[in-house]
Length: 240
Length: 240
DNA sequence: CGCTGTAAATTGATATACTAGTATCCACAT
DNA sequence: ATGTGGATACTAGTATATCAATTTACAGCG
Image 1 (cartoon, rainbow over the protein chains, first blue to last red):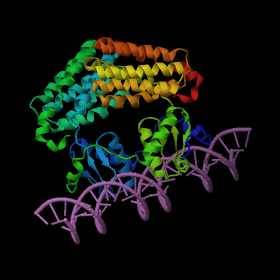
Image 2 (image 1 turned 90 degrees about the horizontal axis):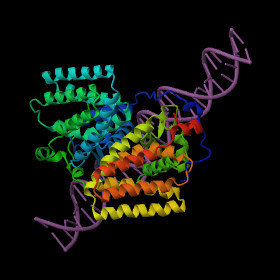
Image 3 (image 1 turned 180 degrees about the vertical axis):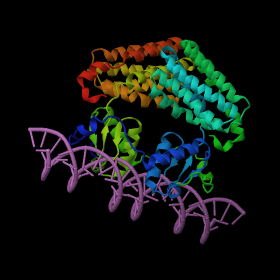
Image 4 (image 1 turned 180 degrees about the horizontal axis):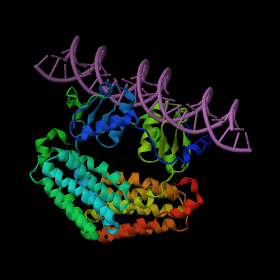
């Protein structure tokens, strides 16, 4: 292999000044999204064997885009690929969950502080709208919709703070926590508690009290840590 | 496309209880590493056009592993792939650099605090060894080796804290900062300053003073922010 | 009955072939 | 001279074929 830093590689002005990434949705993207959802929702439980060939047939496509999707999932830690052996939906790495919570506290503590500093009236309206929807969904018992709005709340704070990149990191970190949480039994009043905690965070942001906002966020993130020990005894196959 | 969550997907116990990922180095891995280094070192400057076919020929392989490597680089934000049009080495997103520094402060502040809490004598010896090597490399003027040891110092702190996952995040975040920094002119005494700041961090960890350690780390991370405005005028093509 | 070695089967990794979308460039009209 | 339309060349996306490594199952031996 010779160096790829070859002088014959020339600059390509045409592609250079392109407005933004206007990537159309490719087959591989669609498959990735589908598998991602199936794994996150536990329709594909941890430990389940996957086969490129089989998935390709199910989707009616060739193995190439399937492979591409699996490689991306592998980087996100959602599947484990064993060369020449097989691919499985990754078990939830219990050791990584406490670390993921630490990351969330560090990063979301920062975003909520910044959001508290600069939140506008319009920003607050947006948060209020989310909380209102969450309250309704909690009453209806729509856990799936509730979870979406929960995600929206945290994303909105990151956006208000002006840190879209941090949200991207958080999303990848949240995955394993969310998978574990899906396994917990629906605790009565849990959703109501979450709404209440969100409201406390909201109030601190509205008051532009950065320290209180961080404290409220840290408390919120501590409250939703899944009981790994209990889960481990109930679903021993799902963890490692 | 039908659902991939098909009951016919069966559990595969054999692959389940595998000790760890013992992936051998694949062709795609090798190409990824090479391109990664070439981009980070600016041998492949931002904006340079890449062609799967051309790279494949240079490496003497097919397009498949090259494509796999480019997809991974694309996820890390190091190349931009425009379907059916071309692939270019991504320009350094100037707007992302301040955010990257924020992430580093939040995450490394946490790791250094934790490291200060629990660092053992052996851990300190490891940090001291790195600092000693850095001092020597600074005198020799070996910027490349110095940079490696700089990375080792920050990684060691994350490992002492017991947060290997956080280091993985930091590595991907650091990339854009490092690319920008490579463009700065070699400032006299910069390496000596870095060594001095590292020593302050080291002392705070040794004293088990978590707050001082965080403060020293925050200061250190602020000191090495590249002057984006200046770079932008000198290398307008490299940023966006 | 248990162990071991070997062969068949299955898997992911790579190579090659083909498709479809994009940019370029030149003929042509204005 | 300049702007426009379309043929053309080139790109990445996808499909198919081949390769090599690993597992698994079974035959044969102890």
